[in-house]
Length: 411
Image 1 (spheres, rainbow, N blue to C red):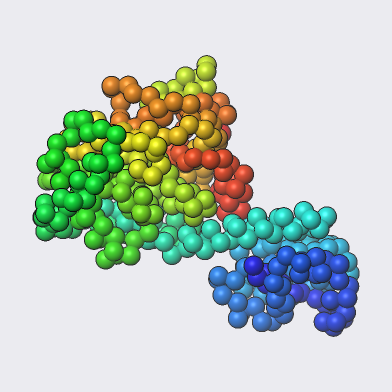
Image 2 (image 1 turned 45 degrees about the vertical axis):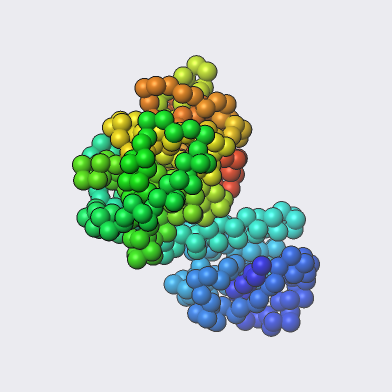
């Protein structure tokens, strides 16, 4: 792991003096990291993929930082051990940067804690760089009922570096018509063999659903998409099937795929993936018990690899196509949702998945989760309908990431 120290030191100190004054700090850093010293006048040679800290080595460097404001990394992480009036200078610089909307933090104090903090900041940085430049395909348009889930394409690109691309459903239809039943027959048979059961779904439904998967996958390759969200209900009139199976298979391949054209949720799923390496489940809160602090979440698709077993069903609302009833492992889960038109708000909590329910009047995959925070959030202050669930407890990691990126936590 490489740490670039962009070094600001007063002209009164030469490089040898700087290193000797901070010998204890620098020796500790070099135990854990490959440290590259970069003179502030050479900042321009660093790339956006270089992890960099502002090493405030002496006092009296405030004006030097201001003069190079445009080249400073964002967020601006200042390292100061207090020697040579470095901490006093860092405090002044931090206040000036925050006054201009730049997120800052000063690393100072016990060295083991400083080292741990650098590891966390590096993890956040790598996740940000993975998000930057990501391409999210919007296949069709967001469902008409998602009135609180809009995203401003320009603002979200400025904040996160992501790009939403509008892709007409006609491209899926064109590809769908080109895929033959013979091309997908073997994949359908293999999938049916792995299923715990096949209920309402017919062999014809399987063939249609697998053709949709191939049609979408071709577009993913053509457009170099990292993620997509699908206006699934509009597929039905033209193809007679839904995209539930396609989304499940795409998520299994590491291509983040969400439902109903929900722009906020697909970004949340993408952020969760770059942070944890895990795919997630996009779901509706369908039953809420504020007294017992339990919520049943449901939807008609889930990545098959997120389940212990799965049943091939029909899509709940339309009774058509292939829906997935996934039986997920019980245990710790993290719930997260990004909101706001520029994706600058988030809800985050943990819970315990206690049961896979089987209500007949809701979507096929159903998870009962006992929340670790009050479930009345969903009744009093929700960030829309869909929320994202992933196995494991990632609350600290995710909270740190969204906080570093200046997002507001909703409780």
